[in-house]
Every structure is written in structure tokens, then in C-alpha cells.
Image (cartoon, rainbow, N blue to C red; front, side, top):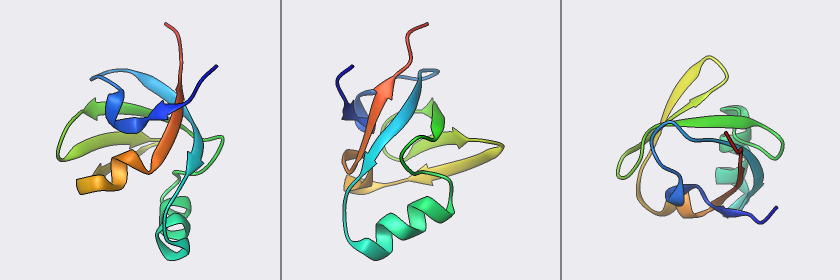
Length: 76
């Protein structure tokens, strides 16, 4: 299945993270928060800010960060 930027997911949609791009320190910080290749997330609020559920944690991303995360949507 093709990957898309996280920004394109709608409220309630789930996806598996395929890749995280950007500066190494930012990619590392995302991994610490649970956003890394293979992790599953759900969009609670799309847009700016984007609110995600990753595991049992809620995370908020702003700006261009949501374009640096490529995901594979889960059909359902």
C-alpha cells in the first residue's frame, strides 16, 4: 500500500507509521514519543494543531511536522 503524509488523514482514521523524515534530533524525539516506523496512531483532530493518539498517549503536532511523517492508512 502507498504511503501518504499524516496531514491527509481525517478524524478517527488509523494508520501505521511508515517513515519519519527530518533533522535527526527531531526524528529521535518523535521515536521517543512513540512515532516511529511500525507504530500505529489514530487522528483525534486533523489540521493545525494535529492531535494524535499513539498507544495510550495524546500528542499534538504543529506546522510542517505532519508532512514529515508518512503513514499507511488502515482500511476499516
